[in-house]
Image (cartoon, rainbow over all chains, first blue to last red; front, side, top):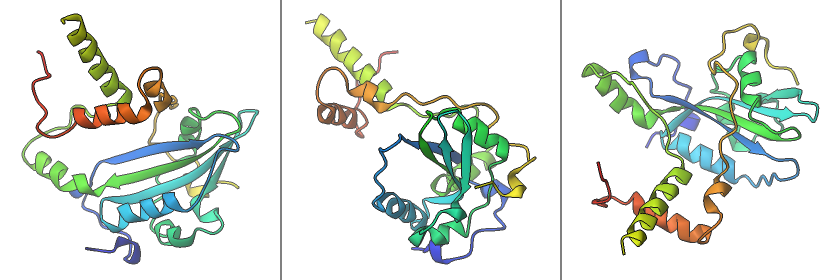
Length: 161
Length: 55
């Protein structure tokens, strides 16, 4: 298994071989954060296994007046094992993106923004493109929707008894 | 702490203000316990589970 955290970032990625790129914004309400290193460990495991490549990370803080402070990942003290990941970031996000992403945040909260490439999906995506396929839809099914569907099914079954 | 200068003035990739995602808590109230619901969801996505779809 390739240990990606100890190798240089991939600088010459063939565009056709690029995996889907996703982002998340994880909000920590004021006073609710409990950083034990568990998140860093899990993220490093995904990188080391070649599941993802981290493209960008920002730390956002939304003040009570709605203004937003953005901190570069490199400005975070005590990065620990994530130092290697920081050295490979591509800094994809623009200042405008910070404003757009922070729109989802509550005042007084802090959030981590993570942008990553799904390396695990790249070979399939490339194969689909070479086969003439075009991505026309994608998305995520919320767990809430699955639960609602199951419950509706159960209710339907109960009515029929 | 300011952003790096390279991020300023560049065209963004997000494109529009992001709306907050529905919090998972919505899925666990009311009704059975969260653990019970987790088991139900896990069963729903288990390989080989069939016969539920009605088109």
